[in-house]
Length: 82
Image (cartoon, rainbow, N blue to C red; front, side, top):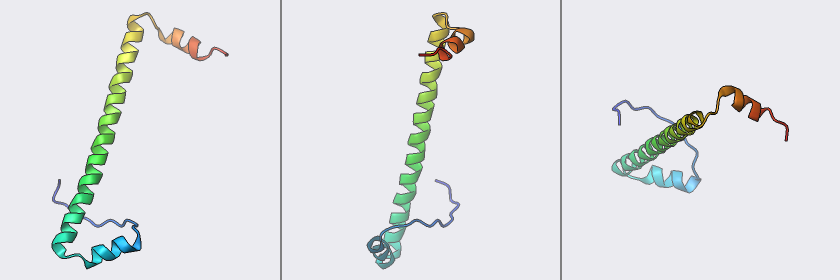
């Protein structure tokens, strides 16, 4: 994690906010670290999922080309009326 810090605002239920306000500085810091970790890991998971999807799509495209699918054939298939 970088050392740059900034504040963000998030909406939480009132009882959660009160618990945060009543926490010690050390407890608040731990809460903030957990939130940052959650957001960071969520972004990494999303990025990894997208990379996996793109890789799968590339594999499918290569296999289709190996089997003779051309851009013209693909367009013809996509434009067929059901």
